[in-house]
Amino acid sequence: MKHIFFTIVILLTATTLCGQTPSELATQADDSYRMGDYTAAIEKYESILAAGQTSADLYYNLGNAYYRDGQTARSILNYERALRLKPNMADAKENLALANSHTADRITQLPQLFVVHWVDWLCTAVTPNAWRVVWLVLLALLGVAIVMLRLGRDTTVRKAGLIGIIALAVLLIVTSLLLIGATNRHNAHDEAIIMEQTITIKGSPEQQSVDKMLLHEGTKVDVLDVYSEWTKIRIADGTTGWCLSETIERI
Image (cartoon, rainbow, N blue to C red; front, side, top):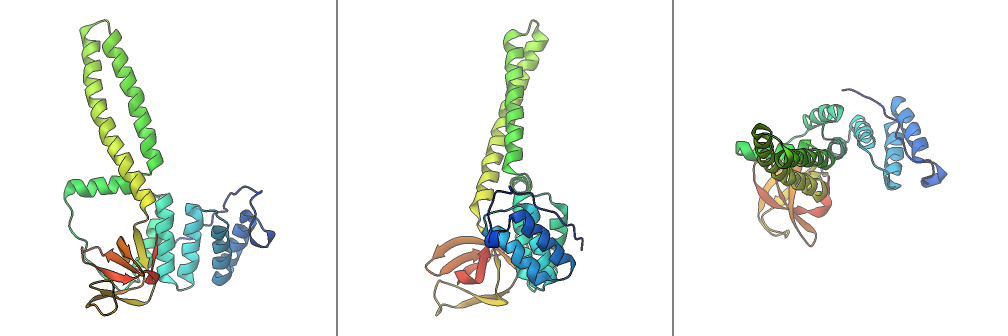
């Protein structure tokens, strides 16, 4: 398991608990981690989050501290949060896979159509900001193609401009849909991690309802609905049920 420490760059004017800046707390947390005092490191990293400061590196370091402290579910939660902010963070992916290998539940992924799988991957692996850049580049190229069509002095240039307009218009539509999908996924927070050692999933949102299955800490679920103190969830194989909201934490 790789351990790469990042000093979080925060505005020095930000205020935190005990009058310390987030940068100072991050340095102290990194030092505590290096010395094996994972409880102290966790406390300091969490203090930075409580002050309203977030970053992929912060969640990654906090995930490492929780993992070393034996709190697998919380390590998974924070690796997932790091990947929401930086989907291609290789160290977070590697450590998440390691942490997931220690969970009890082995759930078979529900098969997806090829197209659905790739759309889902593109909306997850590429950030909304990256899709915005692609959209702007395509828009600029579309402008060039329009100029070629309108001002081209020979048939070849105008034909190239027309073909470019059609192709770029299609790509702009596809990119717009992917941008919307990535933005919605980034803002939805409709995924969660089970935090209790074992929970019973119910058929309906009440204690008296039938027990459907047992799930264990660290398992990732989709959040479908909330009713009173209950949350409807779906696991990777498509099975749905209800659990107490306090037993899970949203990514």
